[in-house]
Length: 424
Image (cartoon, one colour):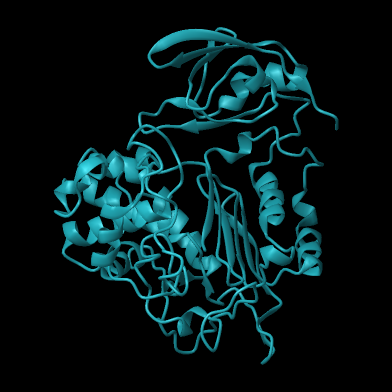
């Protein structure tokens, strides 16, 4: 199945394992270490807006000894979630939908507590829908078994919700499938048609498509993971994208096209300025599936990394997760903190800074800070959401007591955090 990690302002994750800051001079060595550990795929690195590395490593097809190159096409895991999000925001800008629309406005068969689910809940993990729509014992494969849009909506209506819509938060690929179905209803196009016309074409993403698509003259990688599907474990042989993953997976592309996508977000080609704030900023995304493919990339800054991999075998020990974290550190170029706090910052749809994560066992968690708390000021200085780290710099550099002014459930309060010294 697909697995996605979306981190808001991921550079603020101080409480992850602290290690020496990587250097741009070590890039080739860093990549070679991953190759030695089992990586094959493609890597694209951008520094200060300029491409500094764009190479393939290992084989796209081991039996035929066909090498990976920057143009090799890989399965993209859950990356299409970002494409679906763009589509929803485009339709929002056009006035064709509202974020507070209930899904009953689009599907007559939805009723009961499921009818309280809104578009905004679907896109923010608050719908209560399970992570995946597949049914063990009925679907032979959780990604590739045939499923129609109508069947997906029937499963939506019958799904056992994890919580009352709007009352909790849990990532759901299922929800993005429902959003893809809404794109079809609102636009009058199939989801693939809409994505090709309004996302891929404007961004000039010529090597991106769907499972089953053929790319004459191009190399589509074979996956070498824990599971296979079909006679050849490659997305061009997997058949058409199933609604088990439509909108949250089922697509292919290159590192170069992912770069074009992030640039088209930043320059306003894909998302108009009026609705841009609804799309994650300064984020790092790690996507994958169980067929050998993983993808990772970041957005929103001048330094960018893009990784496509066809040798990920999480069950037997290899994942690009550590590789992605190293390149994240390189791109965000943050100094190693002397003290840790335990907060990951996020920015909500109202441009408010909040605690995206409060990590267990950290000073912030012990002080009583909770995920979702709005962060207003630190030691009397209002947060600059463009650079929240700078506001708390005395605490992470010098260990200064941090008095956080927060808002929780409409109430103002102050939480005092004593930073913990990092053992460098």
